[in-house]
Amino acid sequence: MGRNGSGIMSVRSDAGRIYPLSLVRLLQDNRRYQGTKAVSEGNRSDGFRPAFLDPDTNIVYPSCQADGRLAAVHCLEGLPDELVVSRDEAGHVLEAKPGLIAGFLYGGRFYSREEALRLSQEP
Image (cartoon, rainbow, N blue to C red; front, top):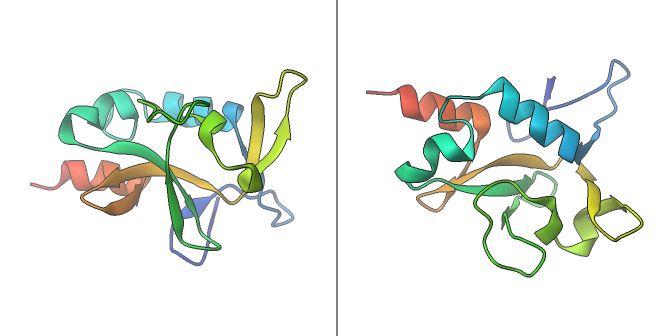
């Protein structure tokens, strides 16, 4: 793990390469943070909405389904084409732009999973 320019953690290889965001990575994160406020099911009732941050542009993309409706969890299908790295034969998104960060929108601000977890632990 390494810090990008925004101070948010991103996944890097030993050689410093930033990996694309994938469904596998989202599932790993969900398992890692299971039962905490760092996953959608744990913070939805507090008003957090799943989203993605592009640290290169500082643009936040709410998580959407393929048809554009807001998603209840992190969903790569609704990302704009310029953020999609690869798709399967049926056109489903497999990987998104390297460095893209899964987190949450809350009160008009983006929070990484770690930040959402820390915020929920504050008195």
